Image (cartoon, rainbow, N blue to C red; front, side, top):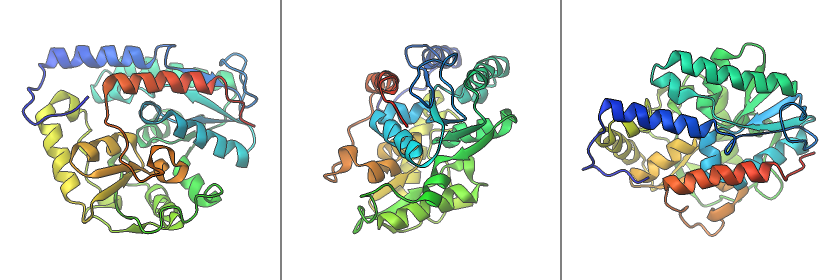
Length: 297
């Protein structure tokens, strides 16, 4: 859904109804799936000591990146399953505490049924939710694992000659192993990084949180544009799918870090396709369907 500066912010009641509907869809079986380390589908049958939790924003952006990231983990670690589900953070941001706890408790039950001892997340919002509300499991960022284990074969040096700025995720400002790991990965890719003035532990919000892009469209657009204009170069790389979308709306060429690692639509250095709500939900469904067909060992 495009964001325009002359749009009228929705009324508070309308906003909450919209987000309630969004979360009902996000937790629908149409867009959720659990897969065990042996490819068995379903939380009651699929077992995995480690579970990859990609987050719904990445699934909405690029199903192929979700699958490639899971395959990468499976090739380097034992017993990695996958759980495609929302962590429920939008509910928490709307102060719908009871509904958030009910939804996230369901996520925890899924992980319990799978026998998961460790969760590997590719979304910084998911990272903070698991760190604060799931004390039973170790939580690791995909980006720190990637920095430790190295790039997949063929990716090293693939971004040589590309000059980028980094939009750091504001929700993990206090987690240096994540934003330092991202810079390690970009260094291995061969990209030249030109830092924004406010980066790493001083990163500014991209404009998508806390829900201002939906709750107040004008304010969200202005925040995205302001942040994008702080980049000293024309291309911004994000490691959060929402940040990538925001920087694109803000007027810069915007790439997800996985675009550089796993290729996809960026292999010819073309800009990824425009963000559309229907396309995003279709991509979530496609991710769900393809997760059920991939045997990741």
